[in-house]
Length: 459
Image (cartoon, rainbow, N blue to C red; front, side, top):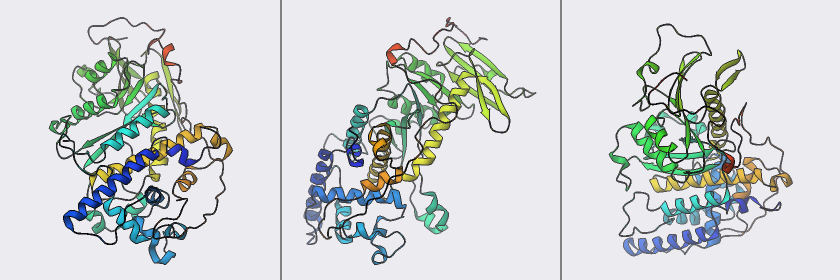
């Protein structure tokens, strides 16, 4: 992108005009069909592309102001706590509510469609194509569920009755995320209720379900020598061996309670009578796979085929200083620490509008992820050195509709000065596996002995 690129330019790498035009068409089609069935709506007029952009801008504004309802923009005649006079004058509240009532990405189900997310799946596919074409991830990545819960400010202030009235989400969102930038490479949505073409709803065992999710997230990563970090619910010997055949290497935290421990030596899963000293570890190996039990204040178990068990690392603690550990432990701690800090920082910029329909919830979460990814690309580009916008300032420039819409009058919005912010970068000793040209990577244990083992033994 050129140095003069705007926030809109980066966002439209993932949500271009042709996608917005399709939303316009589908929304108008749905409104027409709805009125044919339930009666004419005299206040309705077909939505335009300009109005659709303004409509998205209003929704995006809730990620910056964190108001519980997008209608708060018009509250108190412009004098309410969350009101925004400059936005309120662009489109009337009545017109916005009409668009919100009929808004659709896919108006009608086709005869061949059986997936519960058919109303949003084409948008998710388009978004995925944009992610794939705009960004080349580093070698190290993380599979996890991002923070998409309710706004903590609202949760802390609302009453117990309001909390009980809110419906629980009927889906879980999983991502594959670049651990050096935070860019979300791939999204996977699993519906907790209803049928699906992948048969996930038939799986009641969580580790088994999460392994299927992991396979889906890694289907485009084969043959690229990626190193994937996983949590306890995904980590399993069977999954790691399967991904290794596709040249995908893994390092995961293992839990005897949450993980699928099939094929692992029981002696490594039980705790000794006398706890070892802090920093000590035990290792068992089978082929390229290593099972590590490392002791800090308690036992931590790791399964990996991405790091040699004989290579040493160190965990740095503020109070106790350096604690020796295998390199796999250091890598896991560093990469997961960065992803946790990324989520803590950027999850607060998710769109806070909470519709009741599941497909709309998924849509607005996906839009939020697209905006965060657009900001990451912006910080990596020359445009960031021209105007150093913070994440909040970046979002402010996405929510400003440039022209007057039906039911409102044109206003001029003041320009906000940018300020320098700290660049996104790995925390602590991350990045341990430096992003390299993947063609030059010969294997995860380069320079180490990789003799084949039939059973679990000492390194």
